[in-house]
Amino acid sequence: MKELYVVAAIIKKNNKVLATKRGYGEFINLWEFPGGKIEKHETKKEALIREIKEELNITININKFALDLEYKYPDFYLHMSCYECTIKEDKIELLEHNDGKWLSKNELDTIKWIPADITIVNYLKETLTN
Image 1 (tube, rainbow, N blue to C red):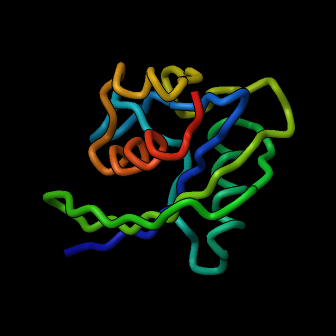
Image 2 (cartoon, rainbow, N blue to C red):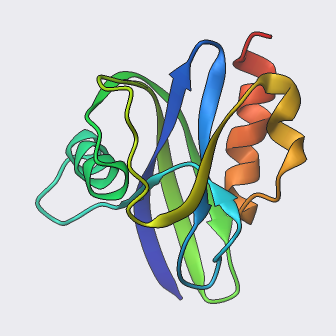
Image 3 (cartoon, rainbow, N blue to C red):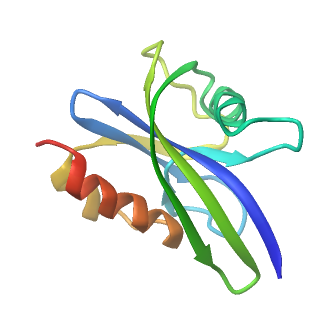
């Protein structure tokens, strides 16, 4: 089975987190935390900074490691490292997503997440303040 190694950004602002709606592929129109694949020559943090620049045209500060998760999809096995981040700019440009929104802890269950990202949602329910 194919294995994918990816990173995801939990971007925080004013006790809210950024959710993005997938604009392509198998999980189109489901919500996710932005990020993507780690290239062979990159560290996880380098990959995350690059992916967020490519997807949202913003620069992030990586504040701390949040969690690692694994998820078995029918066609591949996912390894994801997640980091809590903040953004340096206020203007987000959705280059690969259909939509984006800032969600409070109480709003996390109001959208349909990509299956693996539900683990991150559960992490945020325990750690995010109202």
